[in-house]
Amino acid sequence: MDTIASLFSFITTPVSWVIVQFHSLYGALFGPDTGWAWGLSIVSLVILIRICLIPLFVKQIKATRAMQTLQPEMKKIQERYKNDKQRQSEEMMKLYKETGTNPLSSCLPILAQSPFFFALYHVLNSIASNDTIGVINERLLESAQKAHIFGAPLAAKFTDNADKVEALGSSITDVRIVTAIMIVLMSLSQFYTQRQLMTKNVDTSVKTPFMQQQKMLMYIFPVMFAVFGINFPVGVLVYWLTTNVWTMGQQMYVIHNNPTPGSKAQASYLERLTKSVTHHGKTRGRGERAIVKAIVAKGRDRNDYERKFINGLSKAGLAAQPDGNVVKSEGAVATVTEDGTPTTTAGTPKRQQPKRQPKAKRQAAGGPKPAGGAESTGAENAAPTTSLSKSDEPQDVGSAEASGKAAPKSGGGGRSRAQSGQRKGPQRPKSSSKK
Image 1 (cartoon, rainbow, N blue to C red):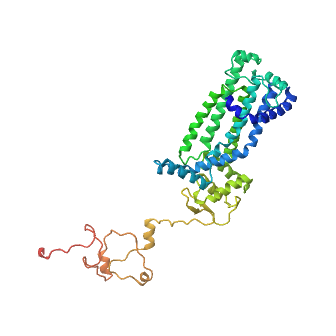
Image 2: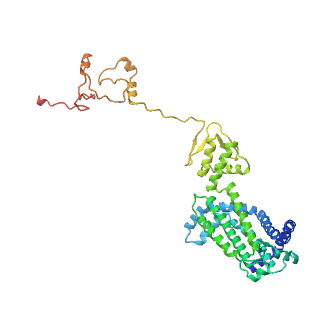
Image 3: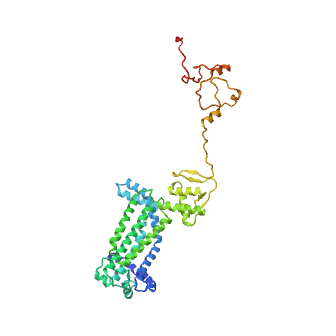
């Protein structure tokens, strides 16, 4: 570790200078030899570094989401050229170039922190060895060695022996208790940060190897921190615990305000955005307008959560515009169903099907059906009506004779009504041989 840290010795002077400046500030408040003065100096160093790394963090988020989007295409390339590794690598590089993505962009914040981390380790290790380094002279070196954080010296390690710890003015029990608690907190904060990323801010509609890798890292990183943490000085543990807490808070802010499309965090965010927009009648702030603009630009490629958001605005009489603003809709409002089909939900009355009338009402409206060959009256010829049902009652023969009209014979081409005890339909004529 000393060999690796010495490679970053060029940055130990700037790091030591920043620590000394913060120490002069906090020393005036808490005392120059207190653990609060030196501990808060390290915490302030972390905050200053992380603020400077915010642009790289934004770039990391964009790169991570771009990689998630490319996972289906990458999987196709791997399956297509699984027997040709060289062609597979060429196609991967071509895909990265066409989309403008870089796999290393997601590691930029960690890589940028590495020089500061090793420089701080080198500074604290020199304090434990009673060696001056950078702008830390003998007076500041003596003050730093007297500083204790919850009873543990700033430069003490979990693996130090009792004699070395006693030389720093503490006991081996205090050092191991403090370092063990800080290592556990450091590992838990790392695990929680990765877990909330996997459970809330990952597109669950696409199952890719990238998600499996992230899930493995969720368990590997905390174990790595626990293993390497026993060899870190207390001051380095303060540095790493602070940067983990910063990362956790920063990740929570991003998940809450700019979630990954298709994730559970996006569903929660769009529910809050729908309530806010319908309550105020407009989008508030540049962030909300950017989200709405991106959703409108997707068109039919919207996911279920985004379609639900557009439908919610339509039901409230609002319409999202391509520039990200929301205005009151006039006339028909286009909404999108779950399968992506646009429909009209406002401004146009819904077409209603006519109700089916009861059978008795239809028969009453149609009137009695005239007999087979009988001529209709003039009123019937003017407005003929047809009953929808057939009557099974036998025809009154007497009434037909009284009116001077002969009933049609069976089998004469017209369909006669069946009398009582007879089969419906045309009847077969009786044989004349039996007469």
